[in-house]
Image (tube, rainbow, N blue to C red; front, side):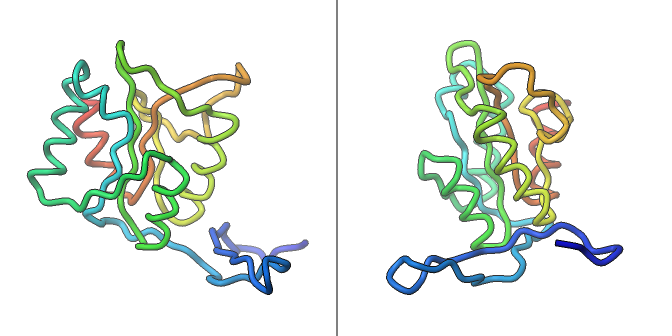
Length: 160
């Protein structure tokens, strides 16, 4: 369909209704607030040999962030949409390799996060996951997705 000039991309929510026979728009727009003290830290094994990730997770805990972790990126990111903010991280290390695939998982969820006003970054390079080249169908990487200020905090711990 056509779009009006100046209209921005949005993330919206649909719900399966009528005995699971019809999709209905249940929220016209999902947005992520700049800051929200909710964290979902994936691949916590990496904290054993990634001191920066260990320090970041300890910061979230000591700063009284609410833990929300299911073990899956999709439900954890969706929780950010439901609560209008937060941060999801999945960081790798030498002994705890990255599992999330750019083409099949990271790019799709990253697009939704950015369209909702959030920010995405590669785990160790200050670049949006949407700007990464798909040079291998099985390319795996660590990421951070979420509210603008929460991802900025991630970058402070991980990149400086």
